[in-house]
Amino acid sequence: MVKVRSGASLLGADVRTPASPDEATLERVPNPHPGALYLARFTAPEFTSICPVTGQPDFATLMIDYVPGDWLVESKSFKLYLGAFRNHGAFHEDCTLRVGKDLVDALAPRWLRIGGYWYPRGGIPIDVFWQTGAPPEGLWLPDQGVPPYRGRG
Image 1 (cartoon, rainbow, N blue to C red):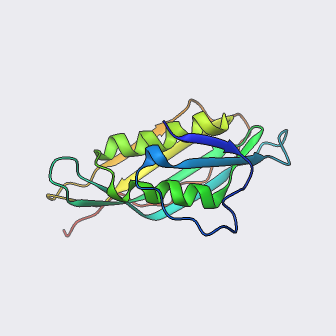
Image 2: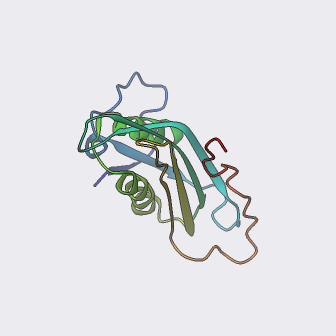
């Protein structure tokens, strides 16, 4: 499980990428608009992890949409957390859900969804989607904008 800390101690500091997600810390900061219904989006187009069987690298675009409650994720800590997957061996489904669930545990958002759009390996792309439930009524929810994989033909 990821460590959670309130504040922004990593911001502006010279910090190395953690060796694994278990060594990472997600920092959270107070949401200045906790009563407002709005969506925050993170796009990670260069997410990487390692296949736990072959040790080969896997690549994905992660799209994370969340409706903040009392907390926001501090973006530098989130960037370092995502980078910690670089040498982490796990299947696509595990990586995608781990990121989503770690954010839910750290932030207690009103709602969160994650789309993991994985590049093909062995000729098969795998897209993984997870959300915490139905989006709040009245929320403007834009499309994630990542097209499904299309091969030639």
